[in-house]
Length: 270
Image 1 (tube, rainbow, N blue to C red):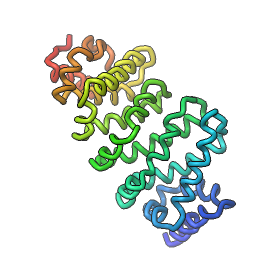
Image 2 (image 1 turned 60 degrees about the vertical axis):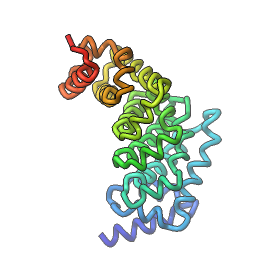
Image 3 (image 1 turned 180 degrees about the vertical axis):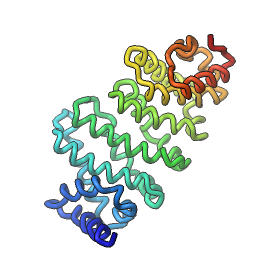
């Protein structure tokens, strides 16, 4: 155990040396589960976060026009894996938010290219936001709803790969399951219309490209919206036809959630 601590501290110090940074990033990201106290050590080590942010910012010029290669993408993904540690750890999550570090990831979520280097960046960035929302911390949701994360996630849900869509939908689901998040998304007709249009389009696409995992998150989003007064009134007109027909869902838990939605709306499945 003592040797592990020494190794971890040395690798964190190596992040400050440009010639050693790439190897240190690989080793730390690969072994981050082995180092339970990695997040606080990263956060409180002088200059470390600045060095990691430098790696993030240096990639921005490669986003438009898209000139990012796999090697550079992998390097930044290793940085993002360390950010995921900071987002997951109770002792660093609050500081991570207070420093507005999630905002540095939004340019990666905003890329239109679906080529492999950009998809890696997008997916790993979503993983950092996913780690934040998993904490079920109202402060996290309050932070996120006042940033661009909702439109960014909705666009990925509309146009991304299946895996990116799944993580983005999970993030929206977690926002909806927070009371402030639910009230925010159901506050205006425009917000409800935007989110339900994207979810409806996803249901239509799943008819052609089935994915029960993705469908599960979509149904959970609809179920939460149906529990809000404004959301319920809206869904009575905009619920997916596939839910009314009862033919799309095969997994038992998801079927129960669809039944709950229809009960909330005062509708009966055939």
